[in-house]
Length: 222
Image 1 (cartoon, helix red, strand yellow):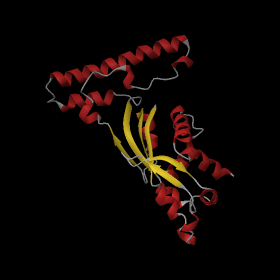
Image 2 (cartoon, one colour; image 1 turned 180 degrees about the vertical axis):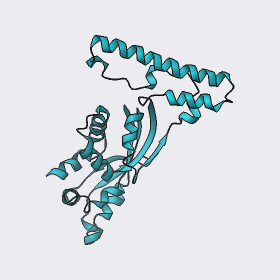
Image 3 (cartoon, helix red, strand yellow; image 1 turned 180 degrees about the horizontal axis):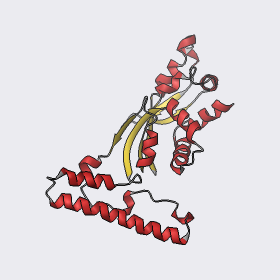
Image 4 (cartoon, rainbow, N blue to C red; image 1 turned 90 degrees about the vertical axis):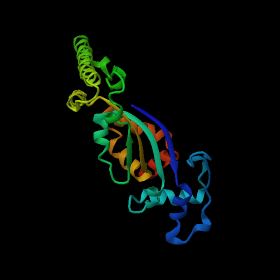
């Protein structure tokens, strides 16, 4: 699993909006600098007044921390299909633009790097050897049907369909995924101890790399 190009947007608007209920805009004391190329946050300083209110609203739960829905986050994620199937649970307020297997899946032979085969070192020697053999067999089968499709000048779409049907859930898709900080919080608390290592890795990455996210997690529990 790989997570790249994490960018966040909308901090000024979010923090101004959180002060609307009490008309307390004059107490706002945070500053932000944005990247001139893509508009994402580059540097920020959360002032003590804003942090006090952020802490109170965040700790109050989802009905009170509506400002987090105004902070947009975008990232590129490369992950296996079985993980994306679970990630699609979080569909409200998210967008996923994926690389296309339909358009580019036949552009080259498949290799072991196109799939997630991890934690093989935990298997016994016999199981490890069997897994490697199965892995090679699966990739050879997929490439066999890909080559039939290519050599047939891409006119028999049934050959392409058969190739797709043999591709396992471990196939890695890359997508640009967009959400907001409220969704990130929900994902973090529901998935941080998940039995799939991809979820634990995802939660660890957003905790470390999304600006101010670690503080928000702290505020939820204190």
